[in-house]
Image (cartoon, rainbow, N blue to C red):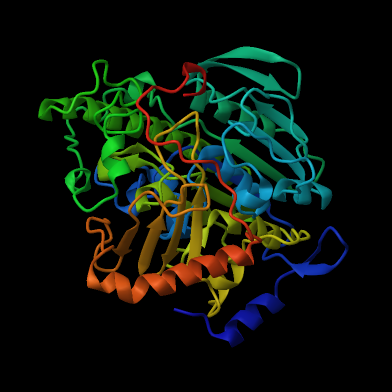
Length: 499
């Protein structure tokens, strides 16, 4: 329900003024500029929280953010892959613009991101955890007063951390605990009266899904079957069936949870179940971490003047369509959680409008009274939350480029509207697509079980969806859609170093 404009006006009139980076007066929603606690999980599914209705996971601390703030029920990444999505979260730009289209590319030095803007406007900034833009680079990145990270994926136990460029050193312990301890230690420091912005990049729940011992058997009694869509493949593109026996398929090694593969026996679902249990177990530790952070902020009187953001970089397929991992244009791959707690913004809300990773940067900068980023593709959801936004998006597009290092997913271009999903797979040579397209009516078929391509309804709606896709891509500067050549689905395992 929209707040009456008169009430919004009255609310804004009583907000104290702060100053942005360029000296312009702005309204912040608090007596002083808010702090920012930004918690990013890796590969967390949109529903992997009890506040989103998960039947097995109990996440009371994460749920608190939703209960006392906002849960975005339809939040999406624009590329379901770690590095491209992280760069989009930072910059508000699509991958084809910021250029981080795979997991091995740095954010270009000339691109400004939201922590940089906050630092320029008087914030002290810190990043600790998985950065993962530049596989072999653990050096401090621009825009942060404090930076602690590592090369590549990091390890669940005993990761080598490089703190402020002093060199990589093993810090014993479980990753989630270590990064939380680092965060609390930094929060206890004297920040000289400045507002602060702390970004935490968890490894969890990224594969290889290794829970700490206290949660290693938390779900032993919970059965996990393959989902129904794993076997509803008759009218799906052929590449999906080819993927079943690969690194990213349910009959493959399951990130080493299955030792003998491929294995399509019904009994082999036990390996799948064990993998999912491990994934869930890592999230319990993240919930503990969130509880410690919220508790510290509450005890020190900072919680209500802190914008707390909890989100994921991309979604994850948990057997849907016979797949594990992400990358595809299907709902579990694209959807991510986004929870925001800030009393001056909203409380106890569930937002149904479609939000994107592109929207994080402009939203946080507006809340903090900092100068915005120019020429970005995202938009702030502050107005949407405070008074409603009739002009809010009802459609957006998704992009993913084929990777030679992980040859299990074609090039993907997709359009998602409030009702329809259209996915196609350009080959990369400018010619006709080599794979069947997909069309889903999300109102009638939220699980994407029935591909409507070739049915009478597709002739009615696909031309309009194609035109809308082209229009949206052009609006973000795509004149010529460059992508690698699709070399087909391959069976070999990826290099051990980059898994």
